[in-house]
Length: 155
Image (cartoon, rainbow, N blue to C red):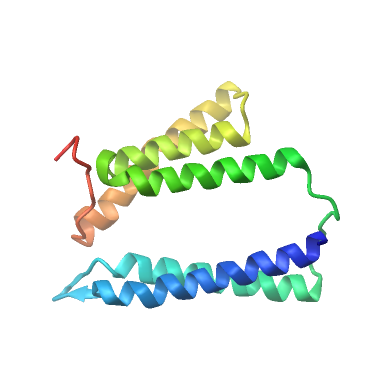
């Protein structure tokens, strides 16, 4: 299978995943009175995944992307490790909470992508790892009043 076919298949699978997430999220309840319900965030994330994947499929069919015809082994290994980290985040986020989980996830993904960090890269990654969960908590937990799982360690 060449890289163009693989790109189309992967984009199509992501599109289907986005549709699945969107349709499943409605079962959790989009709104709870005047505040967003548990299905609010997954609904919009699913739509975003589906929309961006659809754009990727169209770009791939039109061949507007310059892709090499080779898949390198280190790139595949990094993709598999990042996928496993995301899976671990989903599995353990109930225990450690979303905020600490996001912090750890950002650091680990950055380490997988770039194992050796310069001082500036380290500052950027640590700032991202701290500010992203904090911003997510402020937007969802405070402003939108959506319960953010803090984990069994912090509850």
